[in-house]
Amino acid sequence: MRLFKNLIQKYRLQPFVDILLFALIIYSFHLLWWQGGLKHFLSQFAAFEEAEEFLAHQVFLPAAWFVNHIIGYDIHTLHNTLYFPHNGYIAVEGSCSGLKQFYQWFFLMLLFPGPWKHKTWFIPLGLLAIHFFNIIRIILLSVVVMHWPAHWDFIHLWILRPMYYLVMFLLWVWWVEKFKTGGKTETF
Image (cartoon, rainbow, N blue to C red; front, side, top):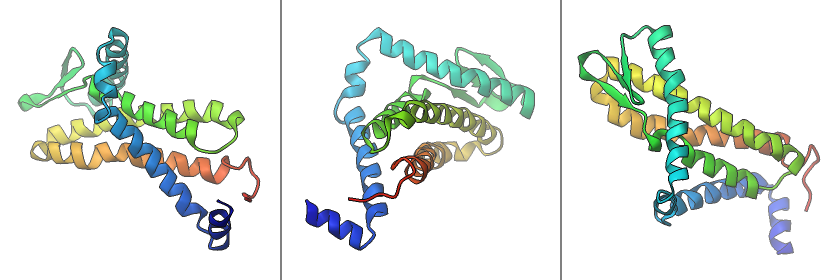
């Protein structure tokens, strides 16, 4: 083990090791959620379903308000769904709540090295940032529904959904750069 630490230090590989650990944690908890059956297991409990619906509603409310009052789209809403002119709609369901990303962020920060005195405020800050991005995501999807409805699936699945991970990565980079070692130079 000491040999690996010496090689990492000698060749300045710590950033690559950190990135690998980030990817391993995020992907492992993604697999546990879907292939590992955690989502299915949790779905059997009413409290989980209620939490998903509550969070989805907390995304829906500000996004719908912004789309209607700031962007000025003439929308109608019903049951966490934004209805647009020309029959377009966005349903903000439990799977849109951000709960999976909250779970991934929580365990990433729980498992990643760093001082607990900073984790106690940095984890909730990350959860707020992820939630805020989710609201922005619904707002951006609303613009897509109105102007480029044919591209909605692509933008939803291949641009905005992966951006969750960009947000988490940027927050994590901030953590590594400012807080991981408590402001001290890392030594092995």
